Image (tube, rainbow, N blue to C red):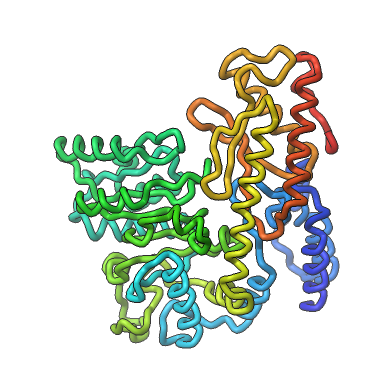
Length: 477
């Protein structure tokens, strides 16, 4: 069974560059065809594997392929798949140190490496999570516990209007009313306005609120914007507010010289969210929370029980169940430890530098396409663009609604060619197309193909009558 699975995985992974970047046609029919009752009798694994790889897996977003430039790509390093097979097969429990001292230490080493990447001291700690959402929740609970009394209904949270939605969800799950989240406006580079933030905090204090948490972004999902982290850290320190940085998408660019410069002040945060399944190209389900003061996590999450084994009370070792919501958890450390040990940080740094270069190259090419406008210049590996007012031909130039309509049509035409897959978002009232370059399989050849598709899609729209626009077009334009 393992041999056949390996054969099919290798065949699938090596075919990724030749697969369409997205395949959604017939998805609902496929899902309905898979509905079934509990099987009473088993069947051979060969036909199950055949159906899985031939019919079920290929449908949807090709998130591991080189043409996936949508949302935030996850590379799915094969080394991590091997590590997960080992971890799942040996099935050792790593929630407490005593259950698997060596394996827990490997995961602790990973946390140590991440702390070094962001500039934290050796005394810092952290925990691997299922993703950025749980990391943000864990940080929010720690901040609430550390800065508020048992009655936290008057606690207020501050972040930009570009923050990831998991922050608002985390606040709600932590028991703080969602209405207590203050979404601060951003500047022309989509970074939180520190002056507006200061004004809002002062107003809330006058009105009897209790500011307790400030969340900065080190790479927003919409545009890759990086807040002025140093200024936010200084303000948080002055206001005695917990400073958390959501660096789920962008944090690992700290490995690069350019990213490290842009993240000045990151090392001053109380907690930092990272997603190795983004910037380290690992499989989905690999997140991380780092904490400058590990004891703050323990105070927020430690609960004892008579049936638990002896827990650690030294600075040398850690019980992960003591510093996070999870007691039962899988051994995530090996899927990070193995590829970093096999290739070293240098290889990941080079790959991330390439993504920065490719995004800057794409923005340059987009600026050369006359009807288009780069709305969000690259700060990391995301750029956003759309039709400028008056562009698009065929009777365009009808204001923001017409501009947005034409940009949506452009998105459909680009994706219909299926060599790349990009997504759209709203920046204020402006609809834009995002390009996010973060797969280790994405290189200049695929970016050239994607820009060629954008150019040809624009040319099609410029040279056809307005009445033709909006009709569906198949793969290949």
